[in-house]
Length: 201
Length: 192
Image (tube, rainbow over all chains, first blue to last red; front, side):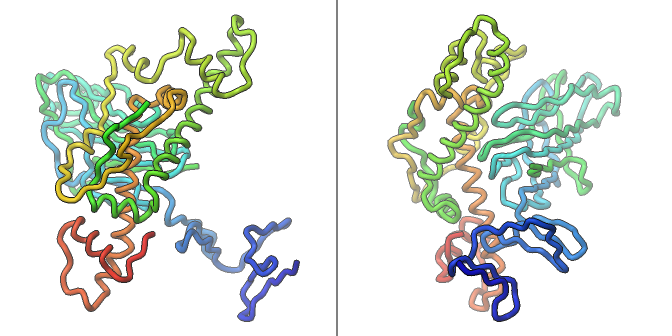
């Protein structure tokens, strides 16, 4: 078994019996003078810049917002599954704006905020639900009148969740105590209504 | 348990998206289900082991995972996810939103049927998943639709710049389906 560390161009090349080694073990520190790029089936999986910034271009990470208001989705307890109409980014193509599908098993961070309008004086409260395959996460019921005007309010929630590969999660809204479904989910050019999901570990 | 006894019918375009990142869709989905079963079996055992240890009426535990799951599921205090949700006040009804979204799409024209004889899952396996998941069929459709969506987005992200840079292309389809058909018809197209 022979080891070659440099090819004819002076680049680091590790060979094992003529076949590129599947793994290499370094028993001490590895100090790179410039960038580290770890290939991932032809695209960069992990990149460490010369300044030490780490980026992962294919790491699951999405941000969707709402550009247009959706009218009359809840109010008397109806569960509305939110359709986020604007994709800001979706690094690994895991979301269609409504449903995020986990590409691998892991712990995912989910953040969402919904702004609701059309609330009347009788409207009492609302809650957000992360409807995930293995379990649902509920926000504390949020009383409109305490924190917001009689017309607009909102709810936000954030959590870590375990997702198995191909599990799904959606964001849902339930508003209560109105006589009918008169509550709108607000979409504007300002990002009040959004969901972001990323693989943590 | 046999789910979707008549198979799962998707459009030709959906199949193209799926094939872009999944060479053998049925084998992939079988593997995905097997992984889900394994993960949920392990999770079920991890959740229940402390309770079994603390239960003085339990004098011995089977060393085999499947036998241990059978013992857990036979207990009076065991409930499936669906039973847990039904016991809440108010009860949570299984939304089946993946199936609802799937069925909301009109699939006319050329279609492809996956699992024409249905998806067969052993009861002992499906029960492990149903400890956590409300509806196994809905979960399967969610997995399939997620993979179709992923294939579509990755295909378009990869080939749209190539098409735009191609001087031979003067116009592009205005629909995703049209764009996908155009991409797959190109001589330089290869699956991802």
